[in-house]
Length: 348
Length: 110
Image (cartoon, rainbow over all chains, first blue to last red; front, top):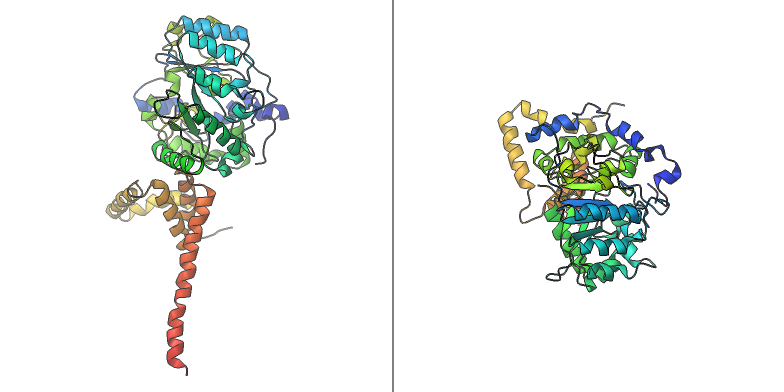
């Protein structure tokens, strides 16, 4: 596939529409339905437990256009969370015992109220995670962001699909690896990824193609050795994440003739132990417009939570949301394959 | 077009066990143990397997171990180097037999 410069939506690609994606994904093609397979866990239905993480999508705008992006993010996407919605998030956080706020995008830093929002969340004494694509931290106008994140003790989680330029640039765009290295050196300089600094810097691996991720522990050793040897870079943990068959990755799977086999791989690798720990059990996802979702993937598929009385952050009700039935589909096999996959890596 | 090798046949590999289930079980147990991380990582073992697959020219093994290498964290550069190792050994194995040719030549010629 050629390098991307715009989102699927900007190209008018019909796959940009969630209903088109759902129609494709939920064709069973002889595979068991996720709901029936989930029963292998010994639980009848997938239900949310206690909400530990509020994952907030600050917008779909991004300086990168990665080939596998499940958000279909890019510079042309204008959907951005407003300060009013951020204030509603803050109210929800004040009225809950949720301990962690996970900020994502797009590039969350591109939201003009990003710094204000981080500062306000910090006042609530919550742990903050920012999913940064790294290159934004070395982009004109954002050079002071690494220092700002360090001052606020924000944990940084960044995608780096490989410890070499080849795979990284093929997935994330030409020159991304070099810029990422530059950003990682700046973060290390501030203490990120270094023992006892208290500044956590984690990396994310996701496969550059139609295959499942390697074991997290084993690959982390390779990443640590190679990044230290070649660039003097250190980090805390590596999370391996499975690509979800939605949005741009779905487009890639279909265009490359890998869709059926990939789905077969996911279904055959269903692991009940991973399914017991899926992140929707303890994470609530907030869309850029304030609507609530069981996970970031359901958000992109526009599958709002089932709880009719608490479907928007302004109506946040922890009691109603905890214990809710999760909306599932065949894409859920992406989180339950092999060792499992979540925003925090493996599940087993 | 019919060919001797069909990619779909790879999924039938376990049917070999129907003729000799005990032997298949022993093979399977040993095979699984061989590829576990030990003194060598799973990635290194997958790369060795890929190289051997090329040396024995098994299309099933090449298919399976290209996927396995990717799923163990190898990239095209590492896989290509592994194939070169196999090729070098195959090429070297032919060339080193030239010593036999030289021995015979020496014996037979003035």
